[in-house]
Length: 230
Ligand SMILES: O=C(O)CCC(=O)C(=O)O
Ligand SMILES: [Fe+2]
Image (cartoon, rainbow, N blue to C red; front, side):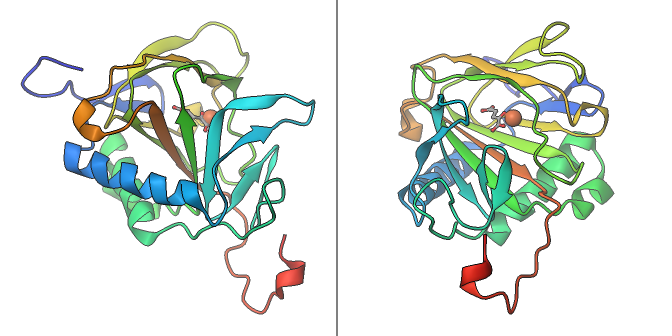
């Protein structure tokens, strides 16, 4: 939270990685929280993703457009009941285009952005996410991240190692973070959230994060019988 009259301006954390505090106003945040609640109910319910070595992620995730499970995208929820994931709504893709344009100060970069999947992560007070790269996409287009609810510590590192150098910053409700270009494959993590920091008026206990991505997978599956859908 900031006491300033205006939120701080956007800040480049690393080349291609931009933090825009307070990008979403409270009404937009409330609409997104309501949308996340609906997506969490189904058609594929939100769940803790199981990792191949037997671990379970502490965050809960629901996907739109394409379903992510370690370490690929499929149209159906292969590890969560097999249902077809909900569509990525056009308004959310449009929000992603505005986000890229805003973060980079580049309307053309925004217009060219065509996200086809969103991962919605829910963090309770104990959830975290370890250092990882987002590298299951075949497109090098930027990742757009929107934060709602409790503030978190976001660790943004380098493309070579999971270790230092990295920058720790706080992502608060309404913040935008975009990473693309030379930072697209940087390691990043959420070491902790700060429970109780969300504005009670948002009506959310915990933290939600929405990441928009381009999978680079073929969009048109017309004529593809359900049995051959993955
Ligand atoms: O929760 C966040 O801010 C980051 C989420 C993330 O890195 C991911 O979903 O790959
Ligand atoms: Fe990530």
